[in-house]
Image (cartoon, rainbow, N blue to C red; front, side, top):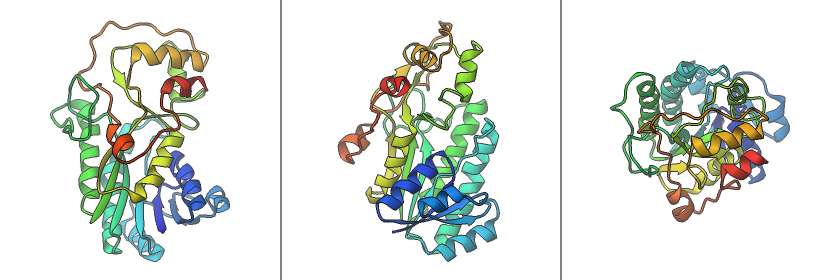
Length: 280
């Protein structure tokens, strides 16, 4: 198939591009600037800005894609407002361009920590936490906008990724979270997180080309409280042992359930637990 991959030069996009081409697909990658790496992988690179609606529409029309894949993020400086903007306005522009070009299928990345409060890890049928407030509501609202727009396509798959770790992410030896850990600013808490290795995010994106329309939690098999994962992460990045917080678990910090992806869709993470992932 011909895949128009928005965010092709990003952390997931680069890995997905390599896998897509290895599987025989043609990739037309949208990137902010020229990318010799993508070209070396065999992709056709389209330089453009997702906020330039007219140019984006023309780029998608010229690509004549069978599928548009949305892997856009803006987290380079830890700016959550910028990332919310790309989820909202960037997605609106990309979906509009895809539909105008007659594209039937859109695949988009989302996140799995936007569910409403609960006790157990959340499955895909749990509602989004639109009753929250403050910066939490900003994040959930941006995700809700992204997902609602993607669902305008005739066929769509929304990949609700877990917390990404591994090379080029915040959770690596020189990443943002490691810096916090070294400064003693990453306490172990009761909050539960579902992690996802960056390579598993890419394999799920490729596998989703054949999945039925729907929303899918893409995370590892072991949701974990901060009491478990934070000490392991600190050890892995050579940081001091974390302090321990006795604050009760944040109600929405419940993790996510990957049963549907594993049992119904046949997706198996290469890194089924953050335990081995962090250690490696």
